[in-house]
Each structure stands twice: as structure tokens, then as C-alpha cells.
Amino acid sequence: MWSLETDLPVRLAVIHIHGVNVDTGHAAYDQINLLAQSYYAKYQDTPISGVPGVQHARSFFRAVGIDPTKRRPSSEALLNRALKNKGLYSVNSLVDVGNWCSLDFLLPICVYDADRITGRVTIRTGKDDEYYIGLNNNEVHLHNRYCIADELGPFGSPMTDSQRTAVSVATRNTLLIIFAPGDYDTDLLRRQADTFAARVLDMCGGAIEKTELIG
Image (cartoon, rainbow, N blue to C red):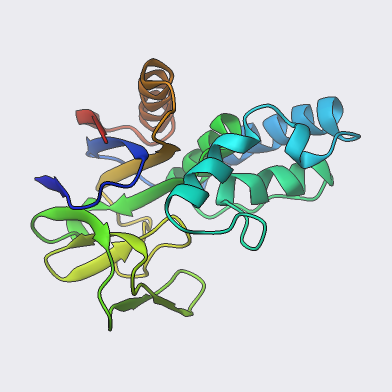
């Protein structure tokens, strides 16, 4: 169950998939690199702000109170590496699909181990003393910041996710989120959610439980 406790102008696509098989193969990673090469070939001499679609993630960050000129959205960080012809990183097959889709859609994407999420999920702003240990091993403080929380507290945000709900090769059930600004085209977001889910099923197996748009 989900609840929305913020009226910020944002929109999410949420996908539930069960029975995935996560591995360290490079099929999805190869697709990221092909996409990165196509961006480089087309936009290597273009300022990153001139790449079509970049402004959507920036608009989302502004909507949740993050200055995108001081902290790049994850999708833009991937694009920046692609335009500089730098290598991208591989984590595991499921995370790699998330990064592939993030670079493709130019929107922030998060991937969670659903079995590490407890009870009701709430989209809200963080309380005074709330924080978690992020994937970068740093404390992510969430006071007045947009976050995703379960009954144990926050586990995700558009900045970086928590170690508590991180995906590993042991993950069998997953929760996928695409973040978009509130004026983002709903039909396009739904199509992108369908593409994301199809790529996960192709690379990791499993079955879709539910796809929904929130906000």
C-alpha cells in the first residue's frame, strides 16, 4: 500500500515485479554502453543543457527542493559521462537495467529490493532527525527533504538510496520507480514504465505484479 503525504508537483511511475533473478552478467551493461555511444556520436559538441529531455529531471529536482546546478540528477550524471566518452559502471543486471533506462529516459530512477521494505510505503518529507546510510556509505539527512519511507523509516530519495533496501544478487522481488516532474506527459511516463518493466523481464526474468502512476 502507498500513501502520498506531499503536494509537491511531481509524478512517479511505480512498478512491482516478483521472481527476478539478478546476476553479474553484462547484457544490460552492454546496452547502456551502446546508448552512451549513440549520445556521444550525436551530442558530443552540444552543451548538456541542449540535449533534449535533460530539463525534465532538472524540473523534478527543483520541484523537490534540490538545486540541479549544485547536484546533478543521476540521469544527467550518466549523460555527462556519456558525452565525455567516459566509461559507465556495472553493478548487477537489475541495477544496470535501471541505469540503462535512466540514461534512455533522462529521468532519475531507483531500484529497490521489495523484500527489504516493511509495510506501508509513504512519499513524504523527512522529519528532523531522519537519515539513512546511502549507497555511497554517507549519511543522507532528510529533514524537510522529499523521501520514500516504509514503517521502519525512509529508505529512498532522488539523491541516493539506502543500503537497507539495496538490490543484490539475492534479490527476488523488486520495486522500481521513475521520478518525473508534475507536468510530465502521463502517457509517455506510462510507456516508459512499460519499457522499463519489459527490459527487467528480458534481463532478469520475473513477472509484473502491478504498474501504477502516483501524483
